[in-house]
Image: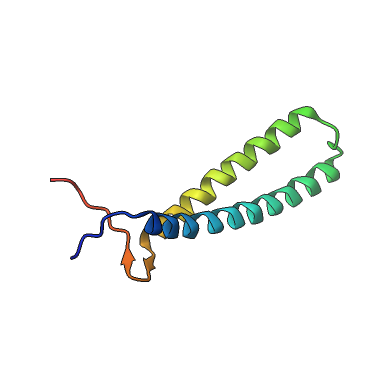
Length: 91
């Protein structure tokens, strides 16, 4: 197995593979969660509640962390053109 030294070009490829998936995934999860929370709050009449705003922010943060962790997992398994990311235990 040939070991490649990190370059800015390779870093940019990995970063781009991660960032566009993470942003789109988080956006989709946020829209879906927002719609669900909006429907539930409207149905229960809780539309003007400051505590609800904090809860929605927390849900958004948790979703963002979850989506980005899943994207990182998938990037670590991805085979890029000309290389793949390998985790190696140090000796």
